[in-house]
Length: 330
Image (cartoon, rainbow, N blue to C red; front, side, top):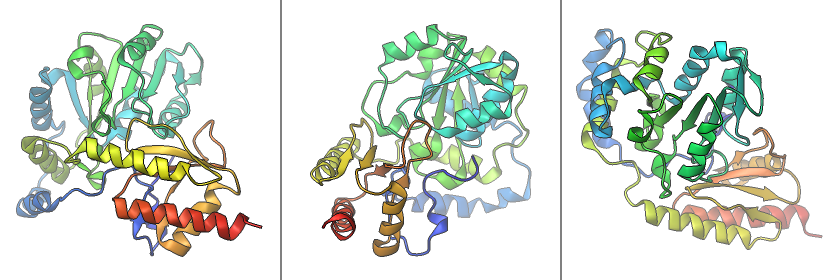
């Protein structure tokens, strides 16, 4: 899906508050920027064909073998790589509503959807709902399918228990997807990785493109892993602010903000459509939200919000109230 993702900021020239992207945007990246400026000469040479040095660092942090890690150019690269590597299995299941790329990647490689599909895709925490399936239920789902792919791109945006790499490397039917893009708030770099058993990783490497990760992204990844931590300095406080924002939205007549275990959540609007609300907010207030109507199973009334600063959150609530008052009050 080339078009239709969230954070279509590139379409606008007046946005000052971006609630569309569910990546934390309060991170100070100046130290990373300085590091990349100091090693800009790496663009004069080809990068490592397989990002092996970064894989070794990640494996050390996860307490697993480098043979159980595969670095990719973002989680989406991994999604298509997995669909390609297992295309001979023929059937898939996608737990909906969720990120469209699982469905699209399976279609590209000829899969047919089935409730008992050999290859099952689960986003956990789930985009766009922000909900988290308990670990025991994830493992039960794995027992029902030949291979379960668990996309944990938002693992650093929740306090709910999740599967860990060490939990799955001994199994041959579970793959975990991880997003350095999300963890470190660097979406422009396109960095992700897969953890799985060495046999599953071997199969993925057979389809891996040489130089899939460019030299600057590789340098950034090694620097970030070496620094440790994540983009969000205080996750509990951030999720508390998410709860406050949901509460304020739920006080608006005609808006329902659904439950979440992350920093983002779905809303519905009773009057008009999410697309109309989105365009009003962008035009009149410089605010960008995510029209979620293109997620399978959702409606034209669904939109997604990602928590920003308290001041910006207050501004969003006021703007939505103005939209409803202006357009739907007799």
